[in-house]
Amino acid sequence: MLSDTNKPGVIGVGECATLPDLSCDAMSDEEYERKLRTFCDDFCHTGSINTNAMRSYPSMLFGLETAKAQLDANGSIDFFHTNFGAGKEGITINGLVWMGSFDEMYQRLEEKLKAGYHCVKLKIGAIDFAKEIELIRHIQQSFTRTQIELRVDANGAFTPENAMERLEALAQYDIHSIEQPIRQHQWAQMALLCDLSPLPIALDEELIGVNNYNEKEQLLDTIRPQYIVLKPSLHGGMAGVREWVKMANQRGIGSWITSALESNVGLNSIAQLTADLYGPHITMPQGLGTGLLFSDNIPMPLTIKGDQLWVK
Image (cartoon, rainbow, N blue to C red):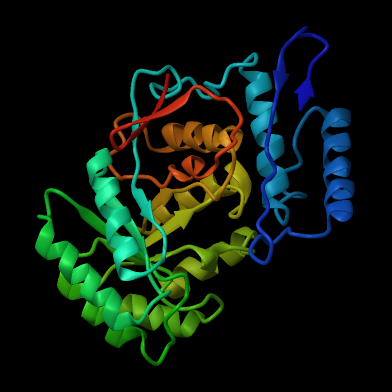
């Protein structure tokens, strides 16, 4: 939380959300608090965020950026003065269907469609691949292309040896894209898949820990994915995401933004950033629905109407 003596009663609140075994800045609570305190003290002393010094600590950077953005907006959650932030426009989001049994996943999918979602992301890799293909085939036979746009996320579940065969099998079912088909840090194999795959590939976990500008250039130029999926808490905070998007645009690579289990504080910040980067009139569905997973969340004037996230 930040405050300014020149703005009595105005505060800025940020959220630092790390995911164990995934975030590049995950560490013990004591280490994390000590490091974050150092960055906060530096900000209080200089009045600015040392983005370069914080490149390797994206969740901390995102939390500090969020608090400063709200402070600069005089306490408003409309950080960047967008149509979304003013409550004039919603952001279309995808529905998320978590991995489970065939029946569980199909039931969750039906619930998303009944709720008004058009774009649905299916997590795969938890059950037998033949069963997952059967589920996808059943989905495509049950719903038309105008009813559903299907994305799948393998979370690195395929191997370099079986990935192409599985991508060819999935490509028969009019799927929008697949996220992270094989595990990260296999650039040569991933580059080959992106070059030959009949199904567009999006990188997600591959981007974690790639914080240096030159490393980002090298990754994008080597792998040449069709899309990148960006999570501010994992991929460099707001500044890092803006950098990724600019570099992707220069190379004709598409992108969208998603949350990573943040509370409503972080979710609002990500949505405000999304509106500023891609708005107005965002057409690509974003991944901003994870806040619904919490039974006890921080109050925030965010609501989902059909398949859109709105500020009330």
